Length: 346
Picture (cartoon, one colour):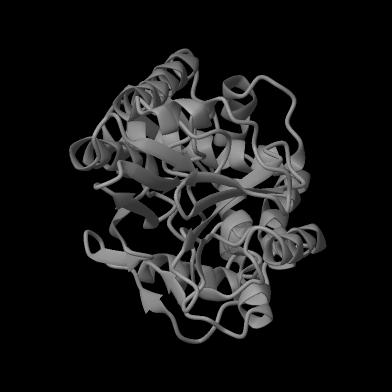
């Protein structure tokens, strides 16, 4: 482990509006979130006085984020000249403030992967808030009653409350294509499972990886199934992405994640994340061995702790993701009973 990495791992996170220099010209900022996961990490890369800062992620589209940006622009970002905004993925804690921030900065260019940009635009157009019966049928099929269905559908409405739009044009990030930022060459990597094509930036010369939410140090990224793709297998996509990262990025790389502390020993963490999902699959198989269950019945058995509505929506979608993965592997099967489906182990 480098001295820089060793020192950084012991460094307290920056307060909102402040920054920690994690490498020359690379700043780590942290903004608050109103959830159990109460913060998001933001990064800024110095591209020189004539260009300004390249920003990586924007934060949630709420007033507290705007205030943190104003403090950062007046403070560590030295007046706030910005060359570009790079957004890793469509989740509102990363893309939510993007529209506000771009307008505030005079509309510098936006960089995203094409899939994440289009998915974000779909969500911002009300993609999961429609009154189309597809959405109610999706949750009711998996055993949700009327109140639980209302709570789960509300997740889409909450997305709209916490985003501020995106420009009509963007610069697509292409997998494995270099991106020069302030004299550093970053190769664009993408990861699936947590989001469709989440962007990560790897600087091989300096052993740095801006990992967004694909690799987190203590918690595991949420893996969800959405109503628009009800039989998707995002667990398989996530596990495949972990294998790709193992082959692309050396173990000793300093990982700068979207939440929590920076980390090293990347390959060991990739093994832990993969093992977590194998263990969850084994638990799901065991729970559904004696009797078939709906996803609504399975969720509180898989997530035994009390959950607020925000957490419950993620838990439901992740329980379904593991069932879909096991069905795809032939280790579980759906039992159709009218409008309600139950899963059983094979």
